Length: 114
Length: 113
Image 1 (cartoon, each protein chain N blue to C red):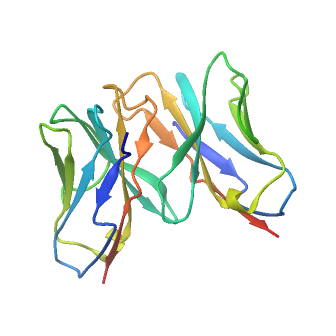
Image 2: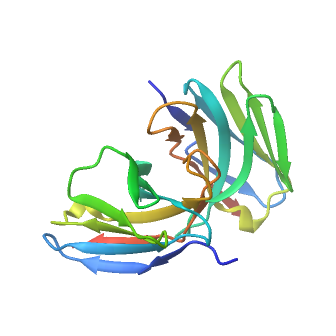
Image 3: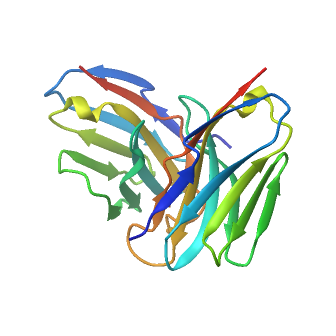
């Protein structure tokens, strides 16, 4: 069974631009969560989707948004990029509808904002 | 306030030696505790998961312990290998609330030959 895949793996943008990241969960998994990871803050929860609905949301500004499609694939969008948005963005999927179940992480997308 | 604290922040050990990483939490009500290993530039991979009734769980050379009374967990690595060099993240989940996962900031382990 293929693992969680994320595209692109690396991305360089400039301030003010927007970016869209993609995540394909493990086949059969319906819950997808997104995290931002920076050296100083560790893993910070962005949001979680289940069956195309956002179930939970972390404390991030409205510039961060996401969506989930009927095939459970998910996208995350960041508008008006800021230097502080440079981070590793991780996607995790789980089979059940509770995020507390075992999550399987993708390799992440490394975003650098110049 | 629900928090997870890990210590030390970083650790350097010689190949073949043992080490122990610590995780203290204040998350309540407790549901389970997980240890993840994250190689540089990669996503975290689950090592162990323990519920309230479990106080030890092993995965090869990795052994996690949990003391639910003192709200402490440790991850013991035996006979370390160069491939153990990674960040180790402690994650505690609670039974209630929308945001029910709490992450530690991790311990960066470096194993040197």
